[in-house]
Image 1 (spheres, one colour):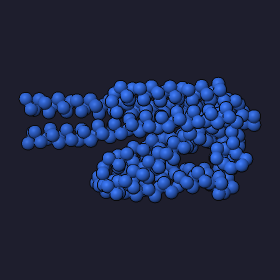
Image 2 (cartoon, each protein chain N blue to C red):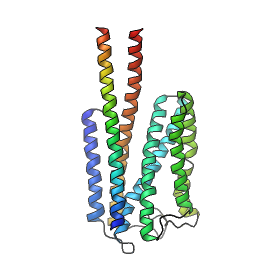
Image 3 (cartoon, rainbow over the protein chains, first blue to last red):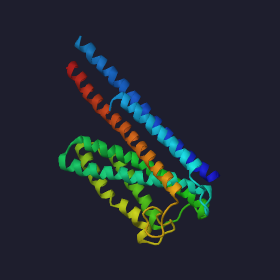
Image 4 (cartoon, each protein chain N blue to C red):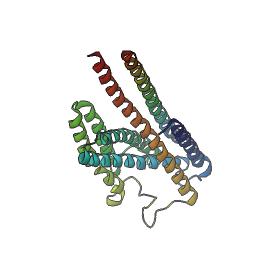
Length: 45
Length: 229
């Protein structure tokens, strides 16, 4: 049972951290896009 | 994909993974010879199939990129390669854990395991190559070629247990006359395969949205620089 538990834990941990990492990267990039759009708007005004 | 559609897709993916877990631990019977450790099969094999799918997408994207020189296909290929490496890594981690319990050893250099490691190394080198080639066009061309040639190892990995004598067992699905799974096990396997496929496309979509965001940032920086000059 312990081998099974270790295997499934590794799968879920790896997937959890990888997907979380992607979401964090995505959020940072979207935030940077908003900042740049705001900067462009200010330069237009 | 709109936000609402993406949210529904995310929830569907999550629920499918939970459903897969239910089928693995509650519905599927325990295998007679190996016991509960056999249940690693339900995540180990789908991970492998999804890695193959990911590398097939890299292959296809490489072919289309070389034909059309459209950067979009370079992005699809590189995104799929990264996701494929993750799933291939899961295969290479869960396999030895299962092997230790069943064979008494973590690893052996038989055809199946060796070709699987080679596959993993090919796509690791694909990713590293992209980090070191600075020129965009050169990077895309080289990546496409590596992605196309690297795919040759996928059928080798798949067929290795049929072509050579290996420590790794013969396939239980589509493996010929003496292969096959008990119906409940087969259903559980297909539920897991569907869940992993949804998970793959969910992760791939996330990767593509990140790459598109990077492109948009580059474009916006150029606009800002344009306004400053």
